Length: 366
Image (cartoon, rainbow, N blue to C red; front, side, top):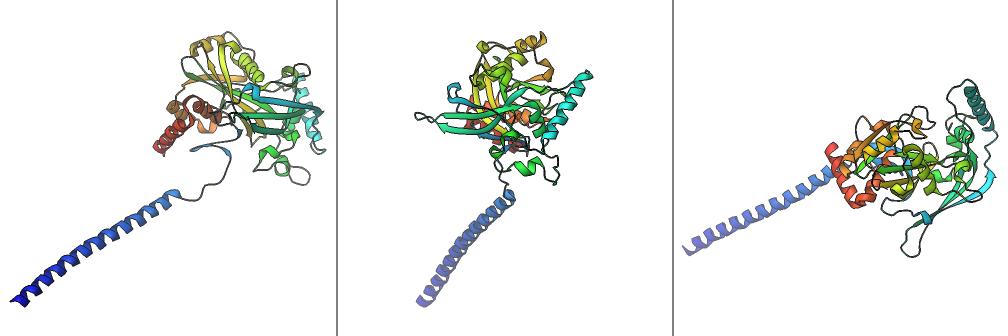
């Protein structure tokens, strides 16, 4: 009997141990399968490796603007911006010189017929940019080196895909895809300032560029913009001031004086598709509301012809980001509009908050 009892006990103990082992093994196996499944799902979700690009992207929205310096959080102060002018004229290659003369003849013909035309205003060509940091708080300092350019040279340089006799083009011969800063000066005869204006009742001013402007006509863009001009922005022998260029643009396009807002420079940028340099600003109006802005515009502004429409967007993260991502608007932004408005949000609400809420919006749209 004793042997029988011990045998039964052994069977029971063995069965229990076997059950425990199977449960433990099953749990271990389940855990391994779950981990493998989770890894496989992550691999499927990742898809192909992303293509490296410095151009601005916001989910499905892409513009060819490269932010060279600036992140929206740190302002590039007026005292930290220096422009150095080398008073020599940039020269186009011999093969492109006839293009400039073609443009000159075409615009003079339009003028003689009383048609809309461009005039060859003296401007600046960007030769290089130097970026450094202050010793105390590491805030950005920039030095922009300029030479003398003109508008017809700029228009000739915009024919980036026009073939030379050997079949090459200005784009293939002179532009480096990975570094738009390396382009020769005659390809950089343009520097534009753009601003996001936020009214005192917290509305963002968005304008549509007119069809007759020379660059990106018909697109929705910044609140105001102004090109750097040798004739208007050089005071005697002194170099121009980018903040003053932007103030001139705000006055000419919105009839708002510099005492009526606080202006901050957010970034230096390059449109890599058109090889156009620029600076991005945000202006916070002290007292003027959106209705005040509309009324001023209705009473006449010098450069009202440069824009066809104006609209207002609540200057909060979700309304602005969703406005940028509207399906009917994504392909109709200028290269500068979305990056400018996004950095302006960062300036007001902070990068981490803007990035986090933007990620949530992008997930909801996918």
